[in-house]
Length: 396
Image (cartoon, rainbow, N blue to C red; front, side, top):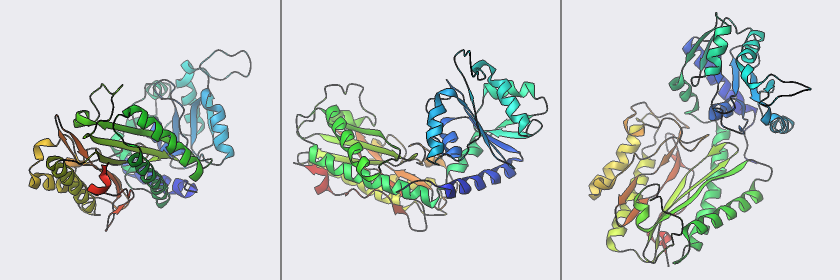
């Protein structure tokens, strides 16, 4: 069963310690939902702007968490399943209590200051993934505490994936290939586009239940754009009631999340035989994706992925139809770091994972985008294997 074990925690913790060395700090504090999950393997229940959370990982000793009481039983389930990596948790309440009282949400600065002091961190230097008004208030209670925000540096923790992470992403990709086959079987003129996506989402979770019982599976997106609306990468804002028509170009976006890791699998379909213009646009997009994948080689610049795809599109004479970069890193969330693919000169590292999704968008005609998830290496490895051929892309 594809899941993350303590081996991933050890791998990530070693990276955290190296980052502490680089920043010359004694602890890292994670306050955002995706970084909290990175540090703990706990899938947060709500957004932390509303209910703040803190994962404190010191250089020495065990880490601890401060969380909202809403997560009490979820955390208990996670501990019993031995899924969560940091188990020293202090909860705070957001409602008045007469018995078994917890610190209240407005007492969070005092609570956090007490926990830092108990861990011997009240005179330390700590780095944060993002600014926190609660921690700023706690700092006023701990005048010898030195705090700095290091968002960009924190992002580097998530570039390279552990082998277990890639195994999970590989399993999610295989499931996405399965649902793309179901899409191909289900596309037909007259069908409501949103109803098609809901039907595919239902099949998605049913198949996931067969493959991954007891694991954490989410459908982040099963979303299709049909006809001229697909010329906008994320739709025209008028999808309710839209139906597939004979001759439409369809672009779909399939993004599953399994045990806290996502992949992307996007394809362009034709409802009926495409004309020569649509064939040429589809072919250029497909060839650009292949070039992007082949450029995901260890040591080459991150921007070479985008440059390779754009070069193919330029040679085909369609560069004026490009509306976005070729892709982005992918992992805990489906838009990871780095997000500046087209301009990033940093050398690619083995086991980074990217979406390769160059697109062409022709107003009045439609969109043409084929997206594979690729693992960087001396030889890149594509996790998604949905066929990329005009024959497969043509329905009816």
